[in-house]
Length: 340
Image 1: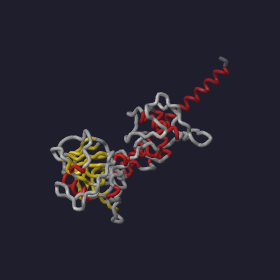
Image 2: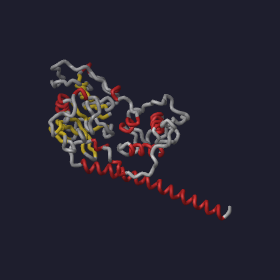
Image 3: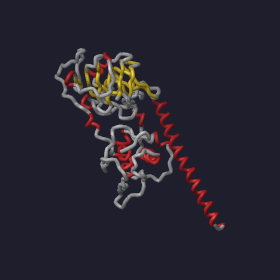
Image 4: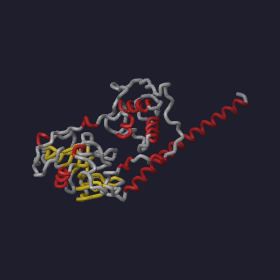
C-alpha cells in the first residue's frame, strides 16, 4: 500500500469515526430531550388534582420540540411520490398492505405480525428502510421516534395508540364497544339507583371479561370502554360505558380505591370533576372514575352521554352522572379495581 493509499485510508477512518460520534450524540440528545420533556410535563401538572379533562399533557404535542436531530427525514420515494413496499421475507401469515395492529402498544417487548405491520407502515411513509423482520430493534425504535418528532407526537419510541392511529394501522375501536339498548325510563338497578342511557343490569349486561378477578370489585376493560360493578358472589350489579383515556396512562392491573372527593378539579383548573374516585397514582396526578367534567368558564359538560364509549379523556374514566352516583355509593375506600 502506497503512502497515498495510507493517507486516504486514514481520512476515511476519521470520517467514519466522526459520523459514529455524531450518530451517538443525536441519539443521546434525543433521549435526554424527551426525558426533559416528560419531566417538564410532570412538573407543570403536579399542582393539579386529577389526570383528566384537558390533562392531555401526558402526551401533549410540542414536548418533542426540544429534541435535536440532524436526520434527513423521510427517505427518497418513487417518481409518483409514494414509497414502495419492501419485500417481505418470511412474513407472518395475514400481513397485508392495509394491515392493522392489535390494540396495544408496540415496543421492544413486541415481535411478530404487529411489528411487521408497523415496520411496513413506517417504510411506506419513508421512515424505515430495514427488513420487515417482525423484530422491534434499534432501527425500528429510531424510525418511530423520528416519525413522532416530525408529527409532533409524544416522543418515546413506542408505537402506542396515537402513533399507530397517525400511521393508519390502529383498528377501529368502536368494533370492540358493545352498546346495549337504553333502559326504559325510570329503570333502576338492584341498589335502587337510576340507570343512565348507557347502563344495563342483569341479563341485559354484557358478560364479564375473562381473568377479571374475583369477589366484590369494579372491572374496567379499556378496549371495550366498559365498567362492571360486581357483587361478592360474582353477580353483575350494573354495567355501563365510560370515556377513558386517549393515551397510554391507563395501566392494566389490580388496584384499590385510595381517595375520594365529591368535587375535584383538573390539573389545569379548567374542568370540575364531580364524584371523583381515585385508584391509581401517576407522576402528574391521579387516575380514577368521575362524572362527566364541567367547563369552569361556561358550566357546560365536556361531552354527552351519547359520546360515552369513546376515548376522550386525558387519563380518568368519565361516567354518565347516574352511573357516577352509583359508583360513589359502591366504591368505598379499599374497593378492588381491576383494569384490563
